[in-house]
Length: 592
Image (cartoon, rainbow, N blue to C red):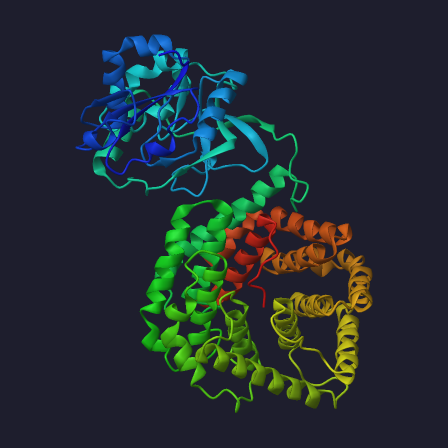
C-alpha cells in the first residue's frame, strides 16, 4: 500500500470498473462487490470484498472496518460503477486535486445521463469552483473525507448528502470544483423516480435545513481557448445555450402530442433536432428521445406509404436514415434499413410533377436521392443503386429543362427559396465528386446572375420582410457554394463582395432592431455560413450582432413559446437546428 491515491467503488455484474484499472502504479483500486459477481472480479484487484447495500453505505462500512486506508491515502475517488472514464483521466483528476488544493471535486460529465446541467463539461474552462459535487463520482481529499464520512451513513441511498458536503467543510469558494479538462460518461439513466430515493432526499434536506442552490464561484479558463470557436465569450455562449435549452425542453414536452410524422414539421424533424441538440449538450436523454421518436415514426410507415414528399412522406424517412448513418449515429447499412422505403420510392413516377418545390416537389425528391448517392457505400454495384442513380440523373435533366424554360423571362414568377435549393442541390451533388459535375449552361448562368442581382436590389428596399431577406441571402449563399464546387473563384468572390457591401448598412434599418428572436436566428445562421465559407470577419461580426439582439430579448422566449401553436413547430425546429449549428461551430449538413 505505497500509493497515495485510490478508487473505492461498489461494483456489480454490469460494472465498468475494468476501464479504470491503472496502467501505471499511481493509484490503488478497492472493489466492494454488492451482488454475486465476486468470482468474476476477484482477480481485478488486491483489495476486494463483498457487502450488500447502496454505495455510500458500503464505503462507510468499508472505511470503518479499515481505518488504515483513511489514514494512508491522500485522495479518494468514489465513482458509481456505471461511470465510464479512462485511467488517464483518473490520474489527471488526482494531479489536479493536488495542484489546485481541492477538497472535493469531480470530472465533468459528457455524453451522459445527468440531473444537474452545472456538472456538464464547459468547453471554455479548465475547472469551475462550485458548492456542489454530486455523489455519482466525487473525489475527496483525506481531510475532507474524514469530515463528511458520517453523511455516508445517514440514509440508505445517500440522496441529499452531496448538498451538505460544502457546508461541512466550510467552503470559502475554492475548495470544491467541477473539472472540465477531464470528463466522464454516466452510462445509465438516472433513477429519479424511486420513491425511496425521493424520500431520502426530502428527509435529509429537512434534517439539515438544506436547499438545492448550486452556485459557481468563478473558474479557471483554459490557457488556449480554441481559436476556431465562433463565439469566444463564455457568458454570451451560456446565454444563447440557455435559450436553446428552453427550446429543447419545450419540444421534448410537445413531441408526444404531435401527430405529424414529417421531416419539416413533425416527428422526423424532432428526431433530427434532438440528435443535433444531444451532440451539442451531451445530454444522453435527447439521444434516446431522438431514436424513440424516429422508431415510432418508422412503425407508422403505413400511414404515409403513398406520400412521396420530402417534407412529410417516405423520402423524409429515407433522408433522415441516411443522415443518421452518414453521421455515424447508426450502422451504415442503409440499403437494408430502407429496403421497403426505397422500393416504394423507386417505383413511383415523379416525372409528371408540375411542383418543383423542396417541400412537396421534385427538388425535395432530388435531395432524397442526393442523400442516397452521398453515402460511401453507394458504389453502383447493385441494381437498386443503378436505378437510383438513373432516377436522380433524370431528375436533374427535368430540373435543367425547367430552368431553361424560365430563362425566357426577365423576372419570372419563381419562389426564390426554391431557386436557392435548386442551386444548392447542384452544389452538394458536385461536392460528392462521384460523378461528372453538374453545370449550368452559359445562358442559364447569365440568367441566374441577373436574377441574383434583381433580388439583391430587393434586399435594399426598406419594406422587405425578414423572411424575404433570409431567402435572398440563402440564394446568394447557395450560388457561392455552387461556384466553389466548380472552382470559379472570381464569381464566388463577386457574390461574397456584393453581400458584404450590402450588409454593412443592414443595421441602419429600424425593422432589424424591432425583430423577434424567431426572425433574427435564421439571419445570424446565414451570416455564420457566409463566415464559415469565406472566413471574412465582417460576416462573423454581423452574425454576432444578430445574436446579441437575440440575447437582449431572452426574457421573451418563454412567453413566445407559450403562445406557439402546432403549426409553428417547423419554425421552431429550424431555429433550434440553426442555433445548435452556431453553438457547435459546425457548418450544418442538413441545410436546405
